[in-house]
Image 1 (cartoon, rainbow, N blue to C red):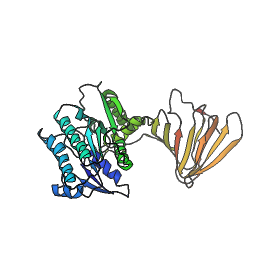
Image 2 (image 1 turned 120 degrees about the vertical axis):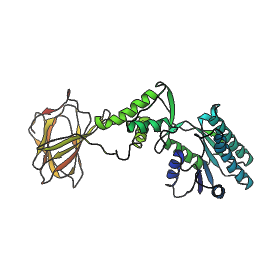
Image 3 (image 1 turned 60 degrees about the vertical axis):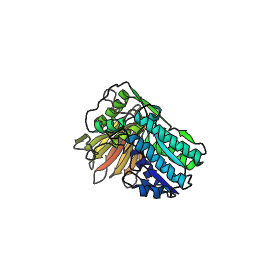
Image 4 (image 1 turned 90 degrees about the horizontal axis):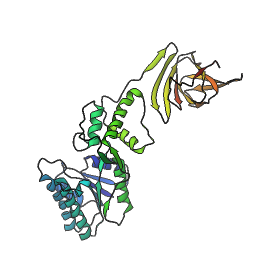
Length: 368
């Protein structure tokens, strides 16, 4: 199946093309502004399905709206009509089509051209009036508040807001692409307007607050709430705008003669992840918890984890090694220790179900 995508190098087009390439049954034909009219005509007639995503939204002069949005659509339609083709077309439009401004008027006119083609050629046509789309690869400082704010906050640059209480509606790029492909593959017979689900409504104040929390997370080690689908998608988007020389950041390694202990991640919902390095012969721990639980995973070196239930004398031992990855559960009510019995440093990944709080540490020292 040959699929043609106009606007293939744009934000939505690029994401769609890369997803389509993962399906072996599709041949993707990419058309963008650097293709000639002859190339467009040749490729359009080869297509079994067309994603028409090309358009103009930031022209130098107002007249370019009609040329880039309406005339370009007409050129494709007339080519199909003159060659007696009824190729299905999915077009990305905008909620601006509901407004009386030059861009909105041009998008609505382009929609009408497509809908008329559906009637004339008895072709399947689908129009998506998209809300503000956010996600990776969107151009900052252009026409996306999400891309601009993610980019600028990640770089410590200023942002400007006229009304922090303004509410915006957003849809995520992967949801857009998923819906587009589903519509194509479902071969649905219903023509006309379609929408993306889910939509997310958020005030600019809350939106900026989240982005600033993402940025400070490298210091606080706090991950955002990944159970919130919008927050998860926005966090992924934010990270895609990090400067390419700033992917790495340092952690606070607490070191002494025994080795080191380093917190990596904190999250109020999922607890805390740390990395513990023990030098040969070193014993760490010898404490217990009332409620806090942990998991130990030795990923390098070898050692022994010892347990003793509080108030009893019997000691239990578990051998651990990076040669065989096994998780050790640390239940409450057992004093425990971990001993490096090898000749190299032992590295242990540790998870606790709650973030450490100095005021209520729930850590009682007692020898195993």
